[in-house]
Image 1: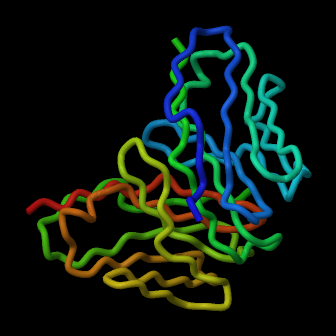
Image 2: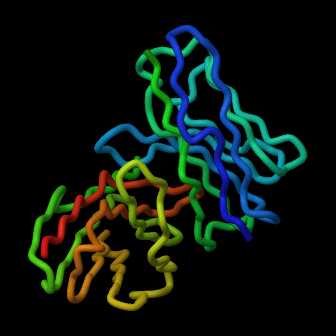
Image 3: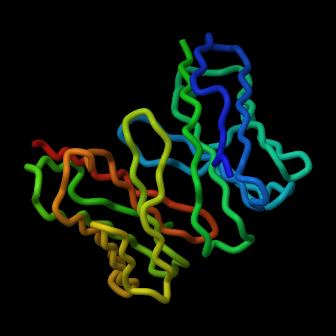
Length: 115
Length: 109
């Protein structure tokens, strides 16, 4: 059990470029969540998957954002045509069960800076 | 819409003090509540999970309580140490976690 892994740890990009982040959950975890956190704030929910199915998307997830979890294993979060307001820490979390009685385990996050 | 508030926003104390961090939420229809620790620039580390049927959980010097009817949870830290310095976040669990804005704790020697 190596924990939730996120790649890259840091990403600096220019406005208008596309970026993609990857999350590898703890093996056999069914649920996978994406959150975004800006400085001084708590994490905000973006979307979550139950296996390969994307069950909910926040209104924060504009059309420029897309998340996938093919085969119910790793997940990717892509941001197209990045804006300076997208600068934030993007956090991934996973949990074992379909229910919400299990702990969520978070990765170390991907820090995005849009110049 | 669920709103989670944490008080105080920041706290600075000398080593050895016992601390109480507060978390309140507006909708009591939650499954569970989870407390996390976050070091600067890092991800979140789970501290305690309290299920809705429980009133408290303990781990080492940490004790968390939950009162669903009043929409409150507290995190008690006994005999604080400089290594406890971090941001502490509470999150209520519905079908996803909804976080408060955190309490930034500094424990000085």
